[in-house]
Amino acid sequence: MSDPAITSLADLNRFRSAPQLSSHERKDLKNELIAEMRHFAWFTVGVMAPSSTDAMTCLRDLELAMGWSPMKCEEGTRIESGVFLKANQSTGCIRIRAEAGLGEGFLISGHQAESQQLGPQSGPTWGPLPLDFFHD
Image (tube, rainbow, N blue to C red; front, side, top):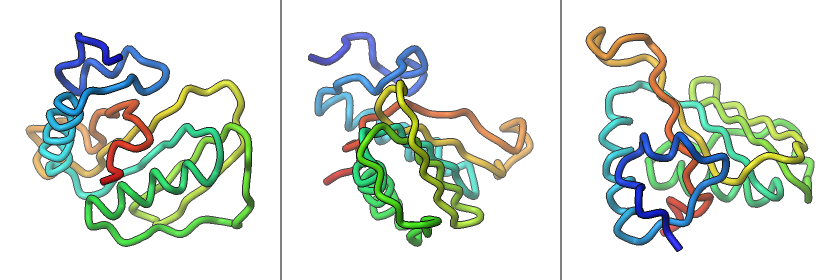
């Protein structure tokens, strides 16, 4: 069941794990996220997932949806318990570590704003969004 109060990306800030979203909420949030992302040159992504495979699938779906070049993972160790994946588009590096007790979903932050009017070089962090948010 979706939370009726989710009308913008800012509404996600109160969640530890990504909420269930209706198809309408997904569409609206995806449009808002893509519009916001246009103001930044590169991104960092944090993925909280039940396994390294789930985390990598989420990241690869995002890369494909955004037309990004695939980032490279340090050491291909599989982790079948809770993980946190950190991906840095600027360096192209992905790190994954075992991390118990996290929520589930992904967070994305923009860097190097295109305009000084947008404030600091790092933008807000959007999310948590569902792991399958960009799985089309």
